[in-house]
Length: 187
Image (cartoon, rainbow, N blue to C red):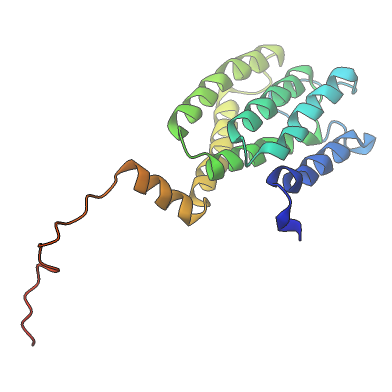
């Protein structure tokens, strides 16, 4: 019965679970911490950042790039303001979804989001008074690249076959061509 629902309805509980967990006071400031910024108490902007990280997971299969863009925006606000919320868990989920569900253009998407990470890393390094070495930002980038690459390997097998079939259509053999180039000699 659950499979009869639209994928958006099926993916919404994951986002709601992360949202609920992020709003529980005991989980505040116990999330991803990048850049060494001091923890800040939650305010209205924190709730917006948490919602931006969690709720787009509902469209992660239908519009994976939109999901990743919104989650990335919420993650940037979360980190730059020092909230360090539990909702940061949505970032690898969104990356895994892009790797699994994005048909095209994978490389361009990876390039755009990689370039977008650079200003975030620079801003966090400057705001964090150099608490983290640049190598820490590179390590975090590589850790984030893994779910996207792994998600590509987890894509349903039919999706790769469909994209391969549309990319290089085969031309049918002529009707009078022999069935096989192998000789019919029996050994």
